[in-house]
Length: 78
Image (cartoon, rainbow, N blue to C red; front, side):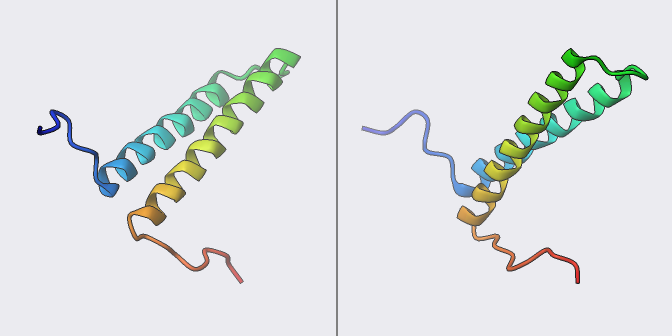
């Protein structure tokens, strides 16, 4: 029996992970654009949540890139 929805290849998984990361980064930017001059505790909590999501989506994107064969030894600057 043929699957109606074939498994996504690694490149498609990577594209989807990159799109999720892009969305997360844009949400951080949107938050920073509306941030009041004096942030309140709710603002700090929202910012922490947004950063956590952005960092997780970046890690997911990196893992998907490695699965697709895009491994970079180091991005550090020296």
